Image (tube, rainbow, N blue to C red):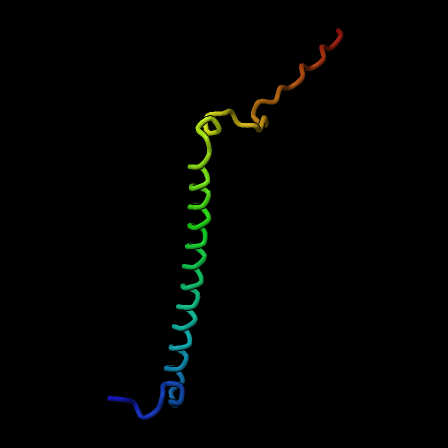
Length: 79
């Protein structure tokens, strides 16, 4: 049972709007899925690079010394 006219030629514009909205939502979902997939690919590449590193590099201390800064002693006040 085919319709006489396509959905976009109907006098009832609600059908046309519903299809347009559905298309927009599906397009957004597709873009979001591609973005999540791209993040997964980047994380997977980082993981594969980490597997190629030697074991010593994984056990070495961090080169960043931000957590181990020493504060100079406050000068003593003369009384």
